Image (cartoon, rainbow, N blue to C red):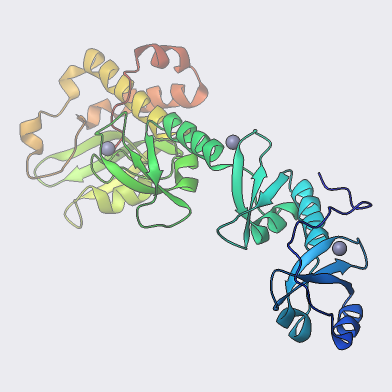
Length: 324
Ligand SMILES: [Zn+2]
Ligand SMILES: [Zn+2]
Ligand SMILES: [Zn+2]
């Protein structure tokens, strides 16, 4: 660590030539003293009048620009690094806008000076790449995905993931969406498994089938009713009940448990698949109108928390979570 009261001694080879008086005046006006000439005819060694530290400088920089004192600059970098929670190690030899730092996690990181200044002003965070990847991988794991690496298209807030607990497909997903679970798998369709959802009971009047009820779940039961059932102007639909669920995954599990229960209790009210063909596209059961009071009762219990333990015990593990 440099002590600014006793500047580091010069290591530069001297160049035996006089110092022109007008150079000395220029140097003084710009905050320096010319210590001596070094290397060859185009170099000087400047001593900072503030810190007395030495900086090798090209002659033309002195005559045509404002030279910067290297020890003063390093002192500023150390101070900025400290404010950013980093330890300044050394300048990057490959790029003058970068330096190497020790991150709080112990890893060494290479960062742009401007970035460290933003960190010092708390405008961005200090994670090193190793810790950032560990964080991103942990976030993905929580959602059943695996972090593969940075976005192949180079967008900084996107990552490449694989659907580990699902179909295995690779997909670019914004990190913020991975954090909140607000995305769908483009391959298997698993849909926002962590976003809020709702169970619903819908009454449908369908041509050739009459009045039936549909128990399902959706992030948006109303838009599901209007657009997604593919019944358009041919039938009529009415939402009878909507029970909000904290996540799509939980909604899926609850729905499966309810269908399993209804299959035991009122199998006679399940509309046979053959009757649905060409009338409505569904993946789970549709019930005759007679089932309506019983299903409403179950949804009421669920909303009141009465079904909680029971449903949790019977719920299958969700593998896919499409609207149904
Ligand atoms: Zn200085
Ligand atoms: Zn780290
Ligand atoms: Zn998938």
